[in-house]
Image (cartoon, rainbow, N blue to C red; front, side, top):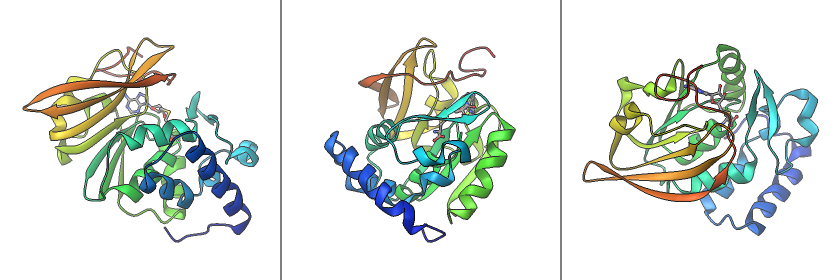
Length: 218
Ligand code: SAH
């Protein structure tokens, strides 16, 4: 990622990477992506001074950008090698989209709020992210045109796995999704083997609700 990476933020970003290592993040690809992606561009100006704290921040439309530790812990589970086609549900600020773009071949990302997508698009360009396609719509229906996906990551909490996402996951692929009630969920990774999903629970999390046909009613 070339682009305008202001040197004034480089030290803060390096310290964030060290914090994440101290908290147990080991995947070098994920740590490198966090070291490369300018998170300060993806957060509102009012909270920019906090961009490299390991905390969640508001991004508008009642939504939040997750704590970097949660992004790192989640993306680690996908075991990306750089060759994958990834589907992300809930573009939000676009920060996680940018992380994924460093770790996979192609990223397809769906967001239901036009306002958020309109903000994320120019920032991703500014950050020189090229292998990402964005779409406005209900991500619980996936993005059928480019399916199947080697990995799917859902950034909002769901009552269950949306059937369309199960269908659009490739054999051998991984689907990461917070499952639970509206206030608290279990971050679960589903591995598709022999056409069936095998579940493994990672950690308790609090995500905003996944609203849509295969999620919570709006
Ligand atoms: N990963 C994002 C944070 C996302 S917050 C980041 O790095 O900033 C969760 C996002 O999911 C919100 O932007 C919300 O609008 C979106 N969302 C919720 N339900 C959705 C749906 N059905 N389809 C697409 N996006 C959805």
